[in-house]
Image: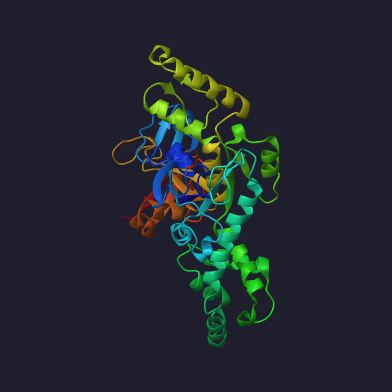
Length: 396
């Protein structure tokens, strides 16, 4: 699973990305600082079962801090998007190509209205951030439509004559965008375009493209710079229908994580406060800066960066966290590590899906699974729940 960080230039995308992943990406106050897509690892939080089982854990593919398991999730930060990107303006073609495999998008918006449509700085409140919401979605819709409609009349007519199912034709057209057959079927069911596909108009193809985008690239709005945003801007963004907008202070998240990495603070991602490790190591400027950060956290509750990531993972992508073990009694793997792994699975995934996720051979030779909490034996069709601890038994 991959989350894409998107938006026009100079709104804080790279700052958000760095704060979320602790990556080192160039940040500057001019458009197109990011040219090559940057990939990094963010984390989503869940309670670690070791607390419930009253034992200690030895994480291998994740980490545990104060009873909270941090599970890795890939993020990609791409070049800023400007109006006309689907026609190749700015770095549009590269931007869109970099997004092909993203499963969900976090749209970074300058809620303060201090960057214009091209990503250039302007006075606070000068630009309407609602315009940015519409323009980015329209660019992706037009991109989808362009791919979908290429030679569409000829391809769809041939498919009809050959008896090829419509969803397979569409999926073939948009191959490379990470769109599944189920997502195509769902979009067709919602759209229900009348008439033969080869006769569909540009408007009808665009409507289908919008449905495909909404289901295959769902978007959360990160209302960045909320600490300096005019109140009306935030009210409009958070009041949008069919959108989730989260107030964000990406610069503060990055500052807190950097200070924590330097040993100056103790700060856990997503929390509403921090602890100064040794006040004597701070100069007056640092102390003043931390007081300002704390005031903002007290007002907003959190920086919002971690909330965006988890909203995307848990609600847009419908992910759950499952803990596989080999020994359901000791909760260990073959090396004796307790609760070593935490896997992200789609809601509705089965015990067999988990077996294949761990290793292909485990799935091929699946016999049964065991719920470590209840010690109940379950079959391959058993639907997993968030937080499950499961042992897979195979014949090999």
